[in-house]
Length: 357
Ligand code: GGG
Image (cartoon, rainbow, N blue to C red; front, side, top):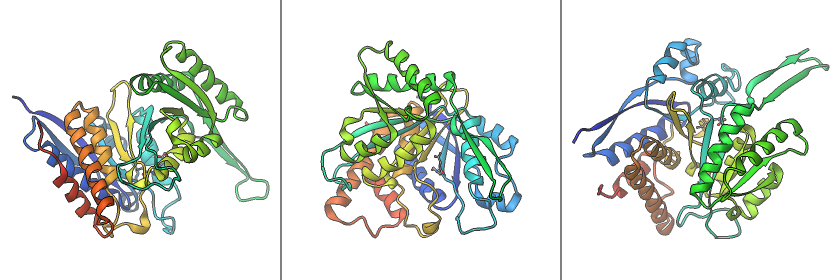
């Protein structure tokens, strides 16, 4: 039996990113031990420290090297807001967003669910399970805008939201495909009553795609209404498709209502497989708790499971997901999870892994 080799780029990034990614690697290696698949890792030290040391965020040569990997395991980025040595948002834009744009991560996939035994802040204890398909390469995140008369009372700042027929149609097609293989319902979230130009394109695109998927029902929801439903009645969602900005904000809320942002995984997918896809927790770098070994690695570990699924290693992915779910349930039942370090949590997930069939 020949062993399948996968070449993984690892970017721990800033703050708690490297800490949670180390646990994801630990669980990946344990899940694949004695299996016919093996991951090799190349660490890329990118992020705030790298910028402070070199003045560079992501060199073209580094980007080229990253293109050669099978997947990227990513931690988190974002400098400490108190750190005046680094311009605000520089690393997010010039590293994370640049990677998503350059590697054409058109689909930012963010599964949201309740976890067995894990309390949510919601009044209802009913479970829910939906997926947000966030557009990943357009919207207001493209950096199209400018400032005139900066720092004067006459200052003008613009931030243009770019929505192309190509970009919108590919994410909408992906979302309908997912709805088809799930519970058959799609919700378009936008704000087309005021963002009329982009909203019109999104709505017409969904209508056109819906005609190809008669078995999928769909509805439309303004983003403000979606925030209410996500808190009051998240069970109504199956697949949400939305733009880059709305998806970013909604999935933080979704993480919070599902039991905490520390449990929320994500995948940034290149649909054509022309470049590696990237797998990262939804949470950011949390500089206030960095280096203390108190970050929850669950989201990074669940993102690693998404990566295995993407690489076709679905049974190992399922074993990791079950290990995390079982351990979260056990911590909730026994009330013993609170004082554990990041590494102890990773160890516990490893110990919960069932042997491969
Ligand atoms: N692990 C995700 C992360 O580092 N997030 C920081 C952030 O600012 N993200 C913006 C985005 O996901 O678009």
